Image 1 (cartoon, rainbow, N blue to C red):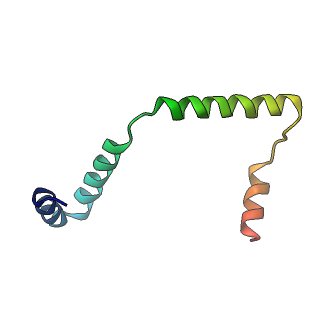
Image 2 (cartoon, rainbow, N blue to C red):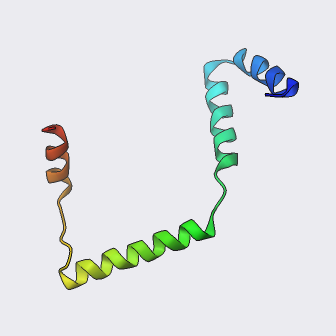
Length: 73
């Protein structure tokens, strides 16, 4: 880290926990830039899965069943 980053980190550690948490949330949000390529890929995947459901190629699994299987692991 740069000297400025080190200084900011030292000052941030002095903040109350709630303020530090809010600062972390704001910093993380600033890193979450939209990516049109990823959004387009997810849209295509959603369309593919919906089509597979419509044709019967893929079926539904109830949430309760998934959670039960995860608990049994």
